[in-house]
Image 1 (cartoon, rainbow, N blue to C red):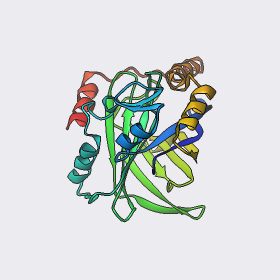
Image 2: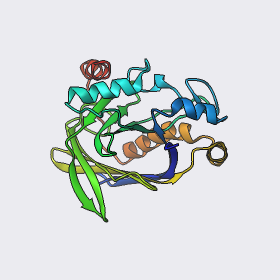
Image 3: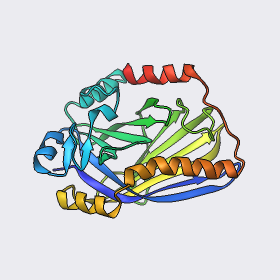
Image 4: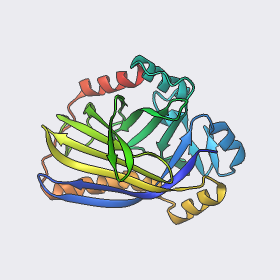
Length: 260
């Protein structure tokens, strides 16, 4: 099995108009989309489209109608990328006791030779909207003896009332092995606004690891939603300007982006 868990931390660092930092422990599933059925057969604590201690539901992703691999391949084909049967891995959190909210999940798309061809970033906001960023044509940067894939994209979805949509992202994905590293920098009008860094160490995906994860942090998925609101309160107390949701036009555009 190539699927596994990554346990580590998620850190945010905002530089203006007020400095703001936080750091949380995090655990993410690294799921080979071709192994989902086999994982469910092998594990008692993990289900696919059914309730177990941890569950992966296709309804939580893309348009909620299933067929995830085919839809990601279709997105990539529209950009001229043919994986020719290569692997697609999903980095995400799964439901724990029936609940999950993923601010962002990542689909890593590899060709048959094992080369990373693209990453699809699936971003959700607390307004029930979702947008997919198809990240292709990476710049390759050598860092710490590893070739990191760097992508850029214009921001298309209202994520936080304390951030503008007039912004762009820089994504950096280190090779996935025994360690995981994802770095995101958001710039507003060309100037850095905040950095987010997710990192972790590989752990086996088995029932023992899932039980330990649930015992160690039984509210881990609820913690994500609670942390979003707690950090929003902290930013409000620091008098960071509040930006209302730009309106239904953005919502319609985001929904169309997921369905297309």
